[in-house]
Image (cartoon, rainbow, N blue to C red; front, side, top):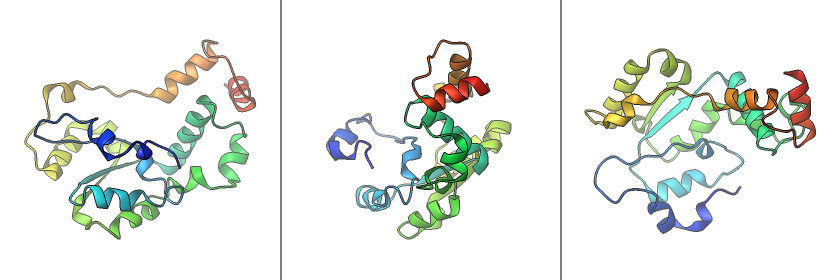
Length: 181
């Protein structure tokens, strides 16, 4: 499927500070089953005691955002109707089938290793959700900088660049999107 796994475990470990303490990363690439069926086994073999925070959102909004990112990145040139509503590979839809995605992990990891959070609850009740996550991770507090992180909407910013002409369309889907907006 791609990604950076082929660079090796030493390369990956080099991305993290060697000091002690909590380590983590955020990636949507770990829940793309069946596109990359080996991911769960690789995680289990590498980090058998890992804990997961699984951020989910309204699956329809997620699929639309995923599609828009793919169009804006130049990886998608089909219309939204063709790509999402009549999928040939189901990628935009299956990624949002959260039960199916989690099922892959629950075959290897116990359920108490998962904290499922909705994006909507995080947006609306940041402090409450952050405290829940801290309890799940068994830590007392986050570093000071973590409390100052604001909400960003990368898709919205990139769409604005397309509409305002700062981003020139490179494919048919981007042209259609620009016209529609």
